Length: 87
Image 1 (cartoon, helix red, strand yellow):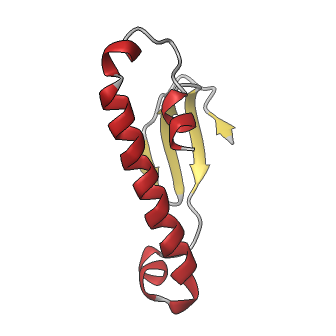
Image 2 (image 1 turned 90 degrees about the horizontal axis):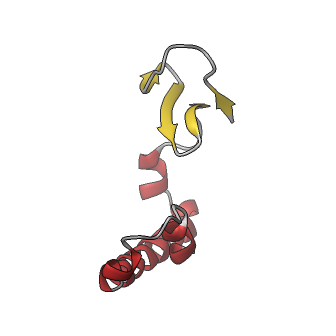
């Protein structure tokens, strides 16, 4: 993944290149992948839709856990806890 090293801190999209800020600094990535309409309607992507639905349910369950444990997690310094919980 590309990193921005210049003095310009850009966020957004220019053409097929997306600039964004994460916990690791300002990063750059190229757009790619399959069109969302094709994934939503093509029978070949039925399994992909099922997997996405399951991932969405896992995310909602993770949110319920985070909400329940919020008072305990307020002082946590772990910024990757959410992704581990979703996993």
